[in-house]
Length: 212
Image 1 (cartoon, rainbow, N blue to C red):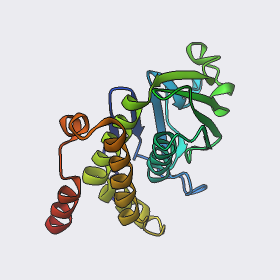
Image 2 (image 1 turned 60 degrees about the vertical axis):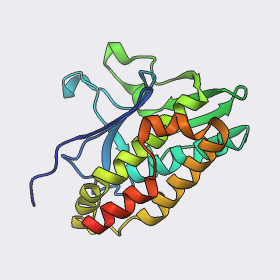
Image 3 (image 1 turned 30 degrees about the vertical axis):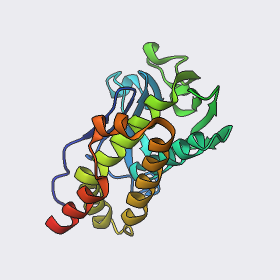
Image 4 (image 1 turned 90 degrees about the vertical axis):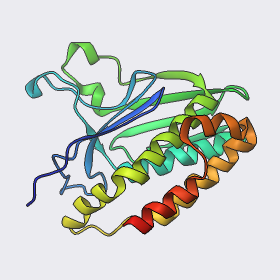
């Protein structure tokens, strides 16, 4: 087997996802890679065991599924749906997203695996409630989704295919990204998002496809 690629970190102002590509979960390929997911510094996905050095490590999850669900959450909240329940494609993760008002998002999270930690600094951190601006959250979801699609999807896909998995539908994810981006623009305005991630996203994807 070829040497695995380096870890991937997708980082926005409040949302951060770290994907460990050094191992592949052959026992549960639905959750292929260890993933650490943080929002406003709080751990929504991650594990810690003293036998593993007492450091935070990844929890089994699916990067494609996580981004798809974060886009689903963003779409639901932008369309003023009151609540969205999901596992985020994270093994033994449970998350509820609610609109507190038109501008604020509440995230109720529970990470069952982290509840069993024997690392003192992470005890009691497996569940909680976060509040953050909806605009900032959606901007970050769009940012990390775009970065994943443009830079890292081929790397992930190569590893998955090497382990006999079927290809994910990236055409769908790109179209879904654009759909959520349009909802964001209608809700908060085009100029704000252009400053953070650039204009003509569809053109960027087309140029990437031509280069490949």
